[in-house]
Image: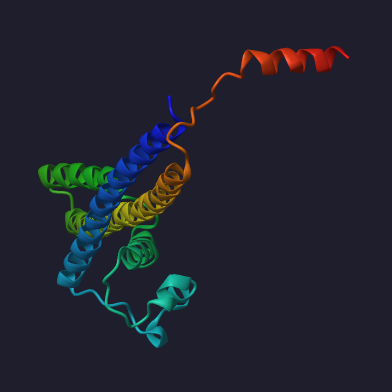
Length: 218
């Protein structure tokens, strides 16, 4: 095969691959922009604003991100992660004593059984038991709401991460496309400067091989 033909084939293949990488980069950029815009729109609709720095409790002030975003409206995935973990998570843990919604179901069920038994036996402690059950129920419901909002915000954060990864993948694709395009241009340039009659890896003439053998023998 002629060297010039080989250069042209490899260069054309490189340009085709560069085109594919460019298309991939555009697709990933579109996905990244969609994820970023969708998360921002959904968070803005929640109308959540971080507490001002001078109103943070001592426990809240220990969170670097709550201090960083103090007074700001929530518009990004990173802000959603901060609010979910360092604000909602903190207060849910404080109010529930570190128990989850599922954990609180055990004492609530036990109190319900006690109330039912006290009602059947006309126990004079029934009002106190009913008050305890109401308190346990309210705590479990508030924990459920907090955990639900926290989960939704963390889902938004996770969706935003996909957007960030898509943007990074797009950057890599663009760089790869640019590199292949430059190499292909260099290949076409080399082909243009190469003689049409020059072969690729052409065998040495028999005479030349014989002379080389004699030189090595000496």
